[in-house]
Length: 450
Image (cartoon, rainbow, N blue to C red):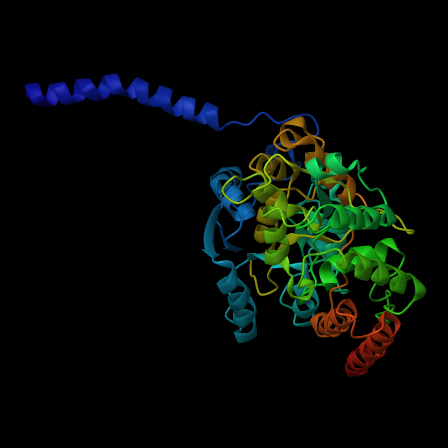
């Protein structure tokens, strides 16, 4: 009896402590949102309208997934719904999603997507049209959600498939210039604002710093990715809005010629250089400049990976005759057309891409596709001032490449031709004339089959 009383007494005394601890944890979990970042609960919709339902979500392992997963219980409290989350390694994920859709066995409402897949996914009706859900006032508070807050290129990925809006951006990255500040100071160089200035700096570094290439660029199979931003900045590109090739216009030729000139000051073997190789060249101090995706920056600041910690700075993408038009990339989220719970799935998708959630993910280092997040000091202060200002400035005018069902077939042709030019095996005009002709055959065939 005494033992029972003692147990009850301990339990009674512990109860206030448990409540206090719980309260402390709850208080700790609260996030003070700055002006311009409205809380999800303030949206003018009934978040509880599907209480008791379960939303199935499939994610690829990714920093965005790692950041949002701990917040999902908050969505469950907000809506009264449950979330069934499955996550897979990226390679397995990218294979499973199209395979399951093809087999008719895809079992999720919401899933991560990449805009390159959009033409195929829309053609097969694998992704749902989000526009009707976004326009339904019972499901979406348009003022609170604020679609215009997404960067222009982030908005563009929604309709890149050409038929309807089937995805929303969740991350952002863009081409920027990273340079060795110590070498710039040693040689008295100024940060280039134009491609002509960039080329002059690359030449000067290569001539005056033996063993250090002026710049590192992709010259391998993915040469098309960074080259697109250069072509666009010169007023050119790959295709017009009707899928007619424009790779051989004077503007495109000028941009391609600049890319080839820059390749003269890259490390030896540039035609085998892709993402890993250009990262290694910069991290190992073998190149003084880098003109590619902003996601490398955290690696450059990591002593375990980088030999140039504290020696690098970032600047906005250079400008060409047509302005500063960098290439950008965005992961996205979509709603499956096969889902029987599209409104429920949209509530999750809307919450996950809201200003609040993107701001909070931004505090974990995830670069947001929303302009409002980049206005917040708490987000910006995580990064060096040069990083934050350069990426923000570049994203204002950055573009995405034109995704198409036969896009990579076309890119394989320009890759092979540009590699011949870089190696001095073929004249640039001849290479682009051939590419134009082959691309026209591909697009004529595609148009005839529609």
